[in-house]
Length: 147
Image 1 (cartoon, rainbow, N blue to C red):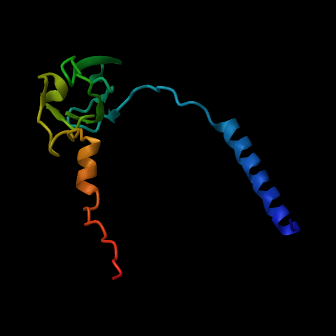
Image 2: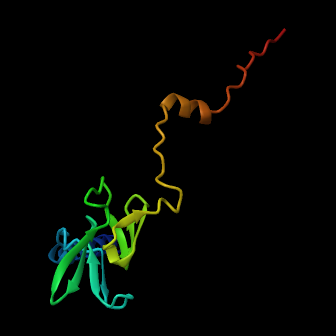
Image 3: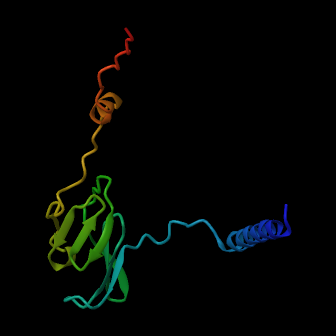
């Protein structure tokens, strides 16, 4: 092994050790956090601060404290979570859009799926997949005859 190759191997091992050392000291597991989807700071038409949790609970700041005012899913999320929320409009994790008047005081209404709904899960058998993409069988080659 030449000195140049040995140097490259040593430099690579040094960089690997250094990156592990720096990454291991600063990396940590990501915890669940606060579960906060969005918070508005008084810029909506009702001039009140509000935020939404992934479970769909809407909280507003009234009279010096936070008050739960409504739930996007009516208390029955059905496996959905709120992924985006902005002043009376919430987007669920399955793509469903919910709207409200007066920030949830009159309830939330589903407006359906603007993008066509969830993608259906197609369960296809291995045999049908092979028959669709397998090369078409050619006739067997004929043996040459020498007469």
